[in-house]
Length: 383
Image 1 (tube, helix red, strand yellow):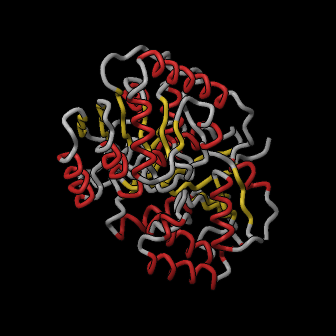
Image 2 (cartoon, helix red, strand yellow):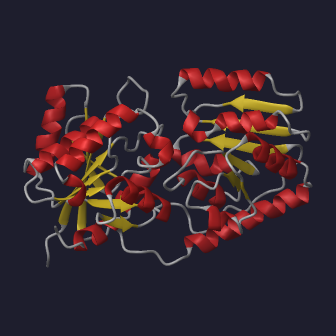
Image 3 (spheres, helix red, strand yellow):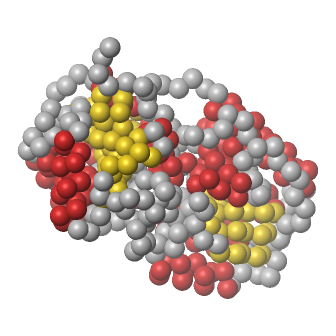
């Protein structure tokens, strides 16, 4: 019997952390979906996004968590961080999987150590998770460009295997690094149920929801500005981590300018196990994002039979065109028209759109899937 391949997974956040949004759920699903021929070894931080208190798990040692060995490292301590790197090296991983390109401790340092031979003959798989999209590259451009120049100077872009989750991300990677680089395209895993939630009729105004990190990239300000011109009543619930205080204040100011028939309530972030049940209490997810490499919350909304309004900047445009949802350009006017159209429709029409969303989800979930990304990456001929 062949020995299982040990995979060192560097994850910026890992359950029970959840404030990092969809990527946390995607990485967790990827690890739990691993074929029996792989042994996942996850190295992550012991804090959730924006939190100062540690997660309720043992830190700085290997523990078993959801079908994987996980090392929750105190990343702010150089000594603890160094021990984490050596702890993984002692496990002799045959594949390293980085789930970011720019994370200093969980991407940049491991890559440079790989270049120096610290990880032996391990192969390197990098999932940039949307970091090469135009919207992402426009933020902190100086730092990113400096590291990208170093990466290219060392020839690392030709030696790693890149993981893309959609055709548009593949195009982003090749635009950043050139056509000859090795890209494995495989959409994210999900632990969602095969069957969608059966929707119940909801009385009163349109029940809309925003669920995601409250940062400019996710576009809450566009939805709030659009609501100013909507004549039909709407109730919007906002769930998410308040990462950017200035941006939150900007959104709160927009709420104060809304007409009285539009109500907006801010809630905190939602634990992963509660996301689908929260979405199932709503009729329309508003997601004016500047771009997603996957968009885990879209799959979760469809599984909850909640219709989706989103920009064309995700891999879901084709699916959503037949899902009772709305694909809207990322500007205030089209979002005003789209929300107005849905808010003005009858209770029965809104229920039909939700049922359509659930049916589309079940067809999407039942599709044949490509092999796990670790299988594909391991089969790629080395350079």
